[in-house]
View 1 (cartoon, rainbow, N blue to C red):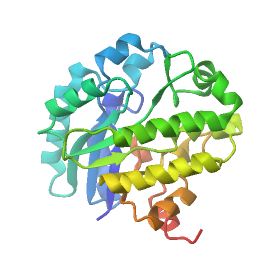
View 2: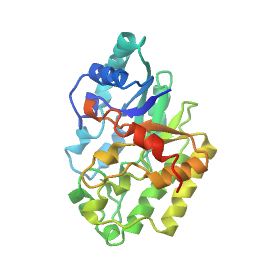
View 3: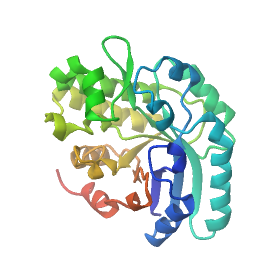
View 4: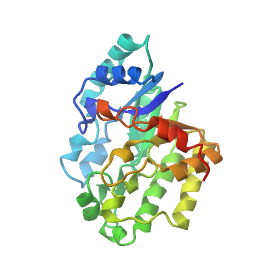
Length: 279
């Protein structure tokens, strides 16, 4: 099996407008046998009402609730068209948002019969002033929302890893397979800010996260997206952490996190090889 467990579509509003057909045709060309469509689920209405980030990101972060029917119809169409060439699984990338667990669970229950797989991710954090901001929008937004933490990057890492741990502890209420998405996304702008490596405390939190993923019966998202980001240059998580996950026998699945057709298959062979290299 060659599987891409984390992909997007035009409904993300922050990627390509290329039709889903082209994604599937490229995946087939690359020899993928399984393909999971995991568009960003609509953000909770309560969250959008209080969100303090860039207003443009209200619509740019995820599909709109009004687009759910069209999204599901699009996935059904490509399953009918390409189902004899590749196994297509349907799902969402769901944001874990502290304080909005009830709304998130309600959404998952409403769509339980449709969902095959879930990627559960953290893209937003609360800052020292109680405002929720994006961690992966751009460096300026990170500086605006988390200036105190950026003076001590380990504090920012700690805040993010705590949220990732909370996402694992959050029960979806479904028996659907879950992958924990890009667990080191907080390092997306590491070259811009000259971030240090994780200190011992944060490395211990990463070990706890990997252990929790294993104990929960979840999977780790081996996310290639950071390799194509100007200020990152490594996968989420990096090869060292991936080898640690292998040593702990954590289940994992490659995710291109493709937002354009060209993203598909990025570094698949290299990431597969890296998890088998000696530390």
